[in-house]
Length: 624
Image (cartoon, rainbow, N blue to C red; front, side, top):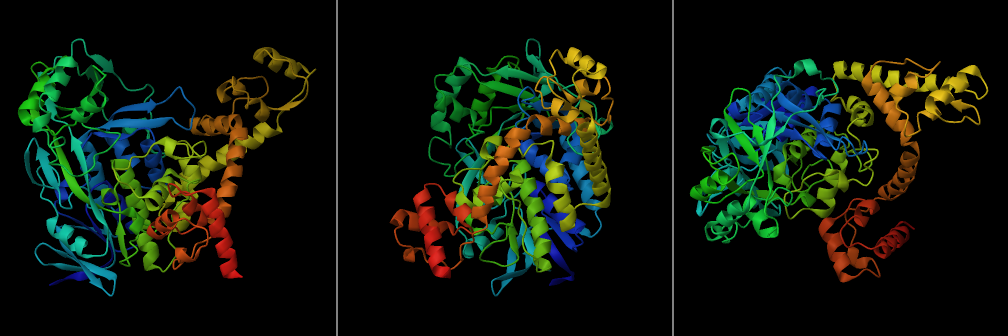
């Protein structure tokens, strides 16, 4: 039977991608339904209890700039906050927070239940309703049909999920949850390219069974960082300390002696695992010359006795897990509360997607999160937000939106996936962005909030706060630009003496700020210049923009060149066999990837400048 209501957008899955997709669509005014196999697991942190990190924190800030939930939920649930790379340049500084799992899930659930235009329904989806290559709804496991004009699939690790502990394996979407096998079979009937990936998680430990004596403490930063542009430290719950231990030669011998019982090394697991989050058995084999690996002991929450030993993800048998855990310092009496495991699942080649994350083959169907081959909460949330936005734009017959590589890490992520595909779980790093000096955490709102307002995904409250910040930055920049420091005057001499420099010509106060040794706070204390606004975010922007102005100008030149290539579109029906001079390998790559622009074609691995020139010549002849 059909459910009585029809929807504009249906989101399948209530993880980090699904919740952001549903909230974004509803904020834009779409009648939205979020379907989950279990409403109690909405916003669940399936693996580590942490948000952010290098590259990942940048994505969270971008989601926040577009009024997404992840940063705000983290501020309400974070029990430890740190700035990684704090001593390095602003481009690679990143926020990371340990989160209380229950508080995080409660923050997500509360946001979903209080979002106007969004409804929740508990049912697993088994089928899609597709008519004339267009999705028109979904069918649940009890045969209930829901109509919708667009559908966003955010299935995580549930499609054909199989869990491995040693040589034992069983079906599951994650430990304790059933897989989505019927939906997996249905998607395999459609013209998508499907493959398998693998991820894993470590055993959880009862913290009361750990001897913390002698373990290295790892406290959070003071003052405590804040994740959301709208957040405050007053929202943070009680803060907790993490600890560090290490594996040792005994640990590694235990692992090496058990590889014959490892599904990873006996060929039982076919899926490729994440390169940058390998299992402990993989690390021991790949880095055989190392006698020790660092393990971070992360609390799961304020009301939980469990800890997450970050660094020993494993699918070894339980008895081996117990032995390797107890071989580490402080863990001789450790009690495992949940075994570690690996999980294999279906993912679909992201090169079969359009830039807005709509599938090329089924109109109105969008994919977001691990279904596209990514790994990580943050990567999933960013994709979910983008898919939710574009699902609504599709309803309104408007062009899809995706930021460029020069605008956001979200743009880098999507372009990487659509251009190159992936053969392993894709994780974001700052090193993936060629314009990372412009794509900092601190300016995510300046880059994206105005566009979000234009799209209709940014609420009035955030827009007002953003306008006040932007205006304060511009007013202070203008004030400093109008202050002149002149040599030979009493004021100029005092400034020169304070800075220990010699002024040979008149200088604007704003130009003084470009000096690497002079911070905004120090500048504000100089005679005749201060005090300026108290908002630290305003001071930070002025400081960074002044000190990196030359580098930013050079990157802008490169961006202009990129945009020239991105402006040259490649026809969808372009026959690459007709492009004279291309090698067979190049033709095959272009035909497989079907790049949308000349710029995207140039980023396909193995594509040469000569091939791009031949393409450009062909396009000119074609249009002549």
